[in-house]
Image (tube, rainbow, N blue to C red; front, side):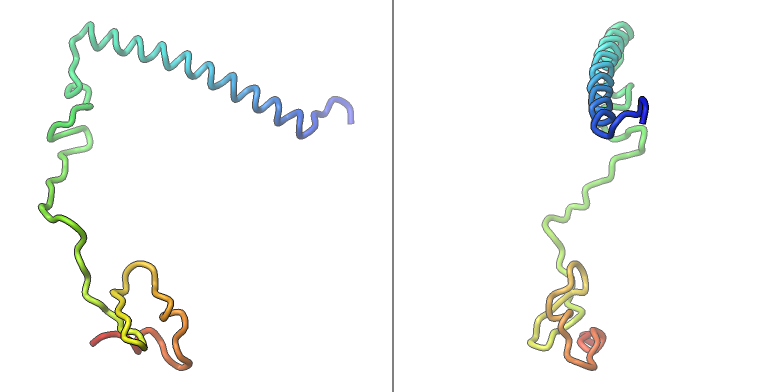
Length: 112
């Protein structure tokens, strides 16, 4: 086979390279953060100027207004099962929908 590396050898090499890459990333990130903090201080920049404020607007547009509603809204039932079980047709289907009698479909249990 010559100089071919085994799978295990390659996995060890990958792990070493990943560890090395993470160390380099951490070092570069520390330098970037220090440089950014220095420039922010030098120019007296604010979070709002950088688009980091919690104000009304951001680079992505205005914040949505609160609707004033509290809690979950209820939805009227759309289906009524063979034993009177109600289901809105939203979310996970109840077990009774999986075991319908022969010849019946979910449409047969729709509430008019």
